[in-house]
Image 1 (cartoon, one colour):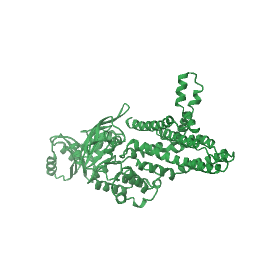
Image 2: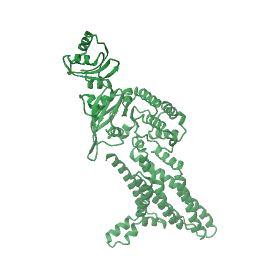
Image 3: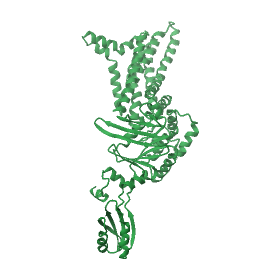
Image 4: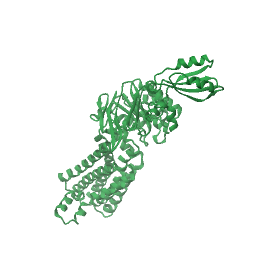
Length: 322
Length: 239
């Protein structure tokens, strides 16, 4: 369990992290999302005691990282952005060193073998780390975080530099670990967060902008009064019909999806549900509706909305601006 | 701490660094032994020690240059500093590892002494063990000071070369106090410089004087530099 309360960090006059608060419960995978330079790594470095915080506090299993650093660090496995590997050691030597460094009490051989198996580095275990590829180095870094079986894992962009197959493997490994560990995972790869995490914390410019599940975030931010429809029929006939619907604010013709089938984006007044009305009017004119969905946002769109500060505005506009 | 000591010692010998250090130390000490004692036919190892003092001033920075700098550059300090190890354990571990390698080099002096003592017995029967042990202890303590200073300077930079050059400069400066004091006219300042002079205190050892005062002086220097290293790591975390 990780509790973060009003955590702040300033470098000189620059505020890198500004009063962030969130909690990661036991057995939860928390996604830490933000654009580059948002303060993700700084926050993680503070959680692990590598950096001190300028204000607030971070509790790992109820132990304050600043008050009892050694006690708190015992519960943490940390994979920093750049895996902290000694390039002159072999994988086995390195893991043995980490085992000693973390003063583990478990049966050494079986514990390390289990970790090597989990992170799939058995076939490189006798090789010098300097000669390993980026993907393997990343996995050795992950293995290092698992030594001592800490119940909290803090992973800073764990899938960077891996090939697609490895990414899937690492993701499923993290999911597996998430069942009995508290995991904080940072990434700017959105599908990754979506695939792995139970809950998402979005930070931007050091500030917390959202803290919710992916579904809730999407629901909250999606304007349910916005619809995307595909209607068969001439654009010139359909558009005025749609515009006549009460509560309709704007009808936007997007493109011709198939022959004589156009995609429209309907923007009704906030809170208005126009779906039935659209159906009635179209069916009365014998214009089949081939698709109708509320424009729910994907994580990418949520992310853009949150970090560009445009919470309720029209996303299309936002994208055009960029 | 034991894990760090073990890893550091191992790293000295997985890279050429440890071997080079030992080879240079053994090579030069052997050369000076031959020139100063064997060829001159005398058993006083003072010459060997005084020559090795300068070799040490240059070689110990090579031994310590990467202790902290490399950790910073490769970001492995993120591992050690986020492990359940105290800052003291990290710094002390690095110090002890470097000191162990240095002490391995120093041990050769005992071999030389035993050899000389055995050879000398046949002629006039005495070997100056007091002077030898004075030199040996003095140089061991001096090495400790150089190592802790080297680690401190290595902690200030990410670049090993800068760490090495900086440490050599610092070592020379540390031994220059009594040279400078010769040019100082102000009595108080001169007394202060003389009292802080590392080389003067070292030279007392070389004539076989074991004063507790001097031993404490050297040990406190070691503690001070290691303490400063810890403070500077801490300061970086808070910056």
